[in-house]
Image 1 (cartoon, rainbow, N blue to C red):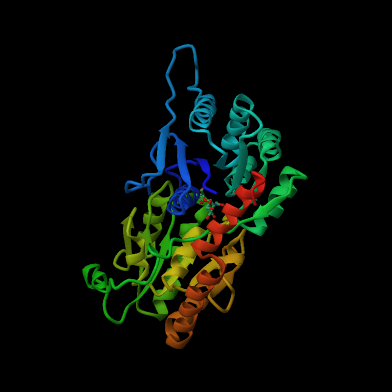
Image 2: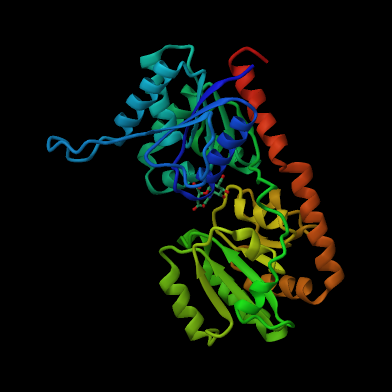
Length: 376
Ligand code: GMT
């Protein structure tokens, strides 16, 4: 049965926007009709799909409003699209504001419009800053017909912090293995001035404080004392200036390459020997999955969903938050033992195939939609 699905996400924000967009594309490839309802065009929606539509939420600036009413405009747009296009369901990413807006739209459209909400962890981060929103997050969750979260850890954390009785199912993130696979990009090494004997350490993020990019630089400082290596820092964000300063202080200017935001990450991953993600908050860590799919062993912190993605000792290593000495020791182990690195690389590709394959996860979402619509 072909479904008509509305998808709302923050189209330009990190992993959740990527997952929402990729999910829409893969569902469209399976014949479903997809309607993205968001403030701007999802950034990975880069080709024409005849059964994908984009409905832009426009917020008018009337002088009477001190703040532009985005949430109301979104709810109105959701209701308008749901009525006109006869949507079966809205799949929204984030409880606030999206699940709350979807509920408002449902009130306008009728009970038949189902709401599936996926939590990515950011609601919980927001809550850490503003506890006055707890009730609203709980409301958004409890008014959704189905709620999923991207890791078991996030399910537990949501139950604990939001104190909701709502059943939350784990549906892991996935990668499009047609994009994230090992490719031949060895020429990039020479182009970036990386010597034949130098190993490549990579970090990719939006350089927010929670990503602890300084820890990556500190660990790399220890690594390069033992192994000839370069560090690729991919991405941009608020911490970049401080990270540059630390690189200068440690005298690493010649060994750290700031590559800014990049689109073809698979090419960069394919020349990398190990990846570091040393965040203090991370409900899943999609960038780890992307690296694993390209056969890159990862070292991550014992935080959030990271230990559900990296299998310690098999596909990479888990270290305690802030323990840069241990991170460096583990990285040196991987970089100096080619047999170990190759084994971890192969296990990483296998783990993605077994647990996070796009086909498997898209089927899980499809099953959820069919159950909630009573057509399973
Ligand atoms: O981590 C970010 O800064 C972006 C954030 C987002 O909203 O996209 O990422 C969250 O969702 C991703 C997709 O599910 C997860 O892979 C990230 O771990 C999660 N970030 C945090 O929990 C901090």
